[in-house]
Image (cartoon, rainbow, N blue to C red; front, side):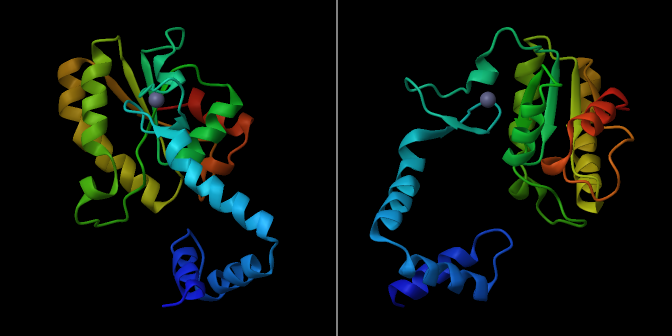
Length: 204
Ligand SMILES: [Zn+2]
């Protein structure tokens, strides 16, 4: 396999990118300036050295002073009693930028297709259980599931609820989901402030 094929194969692994588009990206790079290519290559290399994954919420954050916990999880001013669980980093980014939630977050790392065979391989359910156990010692009272309004999102919510319920009942923690306001097919990544705020207020 030559370099062009290798690059094409790499681009094919990007979300929503098929063979033809992957090939187009590879040719785009060939036609780009050497400066552009080396900046891009350097940015990719820097991902490893400059970005960390938080040991508590699993979102990616800028590495500073060797911290393993992100500034949001480490923030003593934020409300420890509420934990908002989202599917992916982009959902977290959008919701956090709205500034309508002042609790803590958890990034589940995906969603579950109906009849998924090994859910624990697709989402961070074990990590979430551990996070809840630890959270209770710091005053956690409510877990809010903020997933996309589609079949996968609803399936994920059901699975997470079912898994957490026995533990939450024992620990006195409630589990809620976003309420009406978000229309069917809504991806939280694209949701606007007003819609999200109303869905958060009307959680059930
Ligand atoms: Zn964190």
